[in-house]
Image (cartoon, rainbow, N blue to C red; front, top):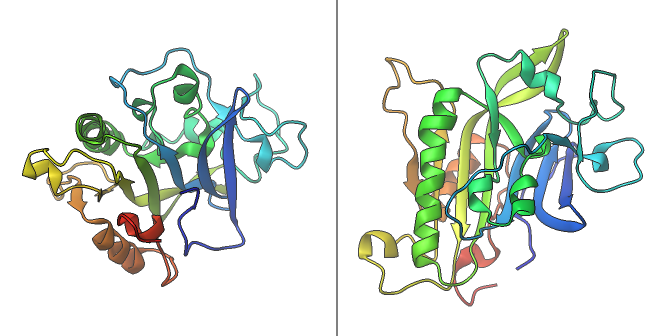
Length: 260
């Protein structure tokens, strides 16, 4: 309903209308101090889950001190002190961060058109994820959600995917550069769904949510899997684990049909 989540306010947070190839693709709330997105909010597009090839990583001119465009742009070749890296992450921040890789909040597998997929390749849509969590845990859940919405959401599905921070920081050249998330969370809203879906899926409509712990699997947490919960339960979890206001709300009317 063209309304971002409420209850997330801080001077370091900036809204980014993620624009690519002359169109607005999705919305990101970005932390210009921690250099990570707090969340990306997007419209789900039915797809077979294909991935792009040969799409360059991009940066966000809207966070630059001066720019003649509001569209994401490929990083320039070669290193230079870029006038925008004070407010956002750059490729060098991830190059030597061997414990983490780039994980997207709006994943290309949840988009269908090539331009919508390409628009997910901006570092303002990226957080540091451990390889095990990104590839084994989170990507598997993204595919579960993709198939569920493909099969049982008849209308439009909206997804908000965000993070809570851990206190861990990726450093570069003795500077704090990128905050590492502790939890990754996600919620979807699809009011027009298939009432004939099997109960095991139907009770997860019109909305449902999940979160996961962004850590490598080891002997102490080899049960690190995604926890699926209601949107209300996710709201309560986030109120306990991160800095959100008491009026924190992910979807208009909590995605209850007819409630504003």
